[in-house]
Amino acid sequence: MIEDIAKNLINLKKKFTTIYDGQSQIQEIIPVSKSELFPIDQKDLELLHEFAKISPIYYNHYEQIIGNTTCVVYEGDINKYWLNSIQHSSSHAPFSPTWLMSAYICALFAKKFEYSEVIDIGSGDGRIAFCAKILDLKSYSIEIDDMLVGLQKELCSILDFNPHCSDATMFDYSSIKLTKPLFFIGGLAQMGGNSLASGVFDKISTMSNVQQNSGWVFAGTYSQKYLADPKNEAGWGTLIEKNNLKSVKTVSLPTAWTFHELDETPYIFAKPL
Amino acid sequence: MSSFDDIAVMFDTESEKLLKIIDIATLKSDLSISEIIDMYYQIINISSMNTMLKQQINSDNQKPLLDKILKIEKVITEKFDSDIHPRIMEHLRKSIQETTSTLQSGSKQKSKEDIENEAKSYEELRQKMSTKEFVEQYDKGLSND
Figure 1 (cartoon, rainbow over the protein chains, first blue to last red):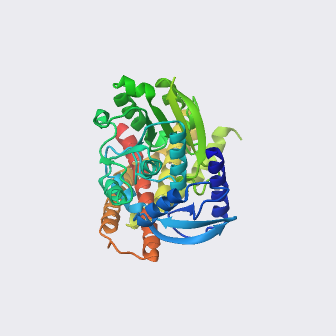
Figure 2 (spheres, each protein chain N blue to C red):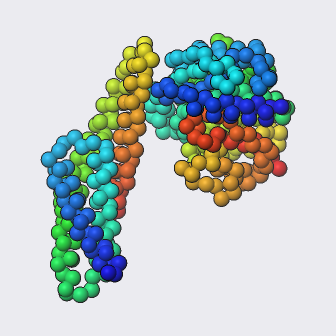
Figure 3 (cartoon, rainbow over the protein chains, first blue to last red):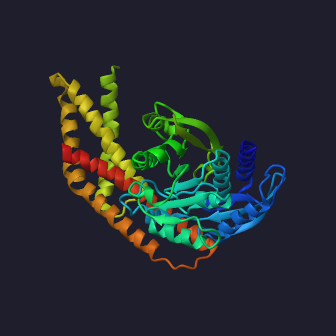
């Protein structure tokens, strides 16, 4: 069950936070091999490790046993990407990645829900699109920041997940053949995600066949640091209601921005009513 | 004591504190982020007390208090709004520009220690940027007055 893998990842992250004593800005873990807790194809795990080892975001890695699971700890720094991204007036949210394992679990759900394509909007380093490609889904990555798209192109040497350097609210979605797409929206609702999602939704609403078959995934938060949405859904309730969507699944997963938090990031899967 | 009296007593203490802060800021060209935040906090605090007290002053025997309020308002307008605040805005703008240029011009090959040390500069840059946003909010308030 994918839900069990998600829960096991959260438990692993909680153990990791108690023993991690490094100084890196971001850090994440990936199990070395398939196990009872993480029944994932070994080939897929190896591709996740390859992504982290090639990505210039990570500058150090080492093996560590966490609980009973042997993992590789990846230490990284995204400061220079942050500095570049805040210089875009149209950038909706500064780059901060989800964990690779979380991206992979999201892609497993995309596959389970039988979507044909994954479109990673505001994709950062493109890891969600990359994970979808691992699972043989057609994947597209749309990112406004040229430095991040440059990084994605380096990572395409492993698997081509179709990076596009574009403002996702202006992108011509009819240029890619979409049949049953799942859109992942980068950024919390309160951190620009709302306007990004609204812009993309406006574009897709002009393609009625695509819109009816589409699915949407929103990264939410329950943190009191952010203004709560009156319709809940971790900040996305109003947008979900306004666009005639319904939430069908919420899965909590570790992300770089919740590493020091007790609550993980809820990913809300929604589809048209 | 009534709440008016409480605020009047507090006003005495807090306005003295503000005068000292302004004296230091007048002489010092390079204020730390925490000094800048403390100073704006104190300015906002005193300005709120001034507004509240002025609305409730209604007798001649409260004239000394009114004089104190007018005196501190004059200091805020002449020393802070006209001199210190524009200097701080300029200082933050330049400092952000310099730190950004330094960070952008760094060499490509860095050790683990270099990256982790540089992360501290990025953290300082983020602090300066959010302080600048806060200071700009104060400036917008001045423009709307």
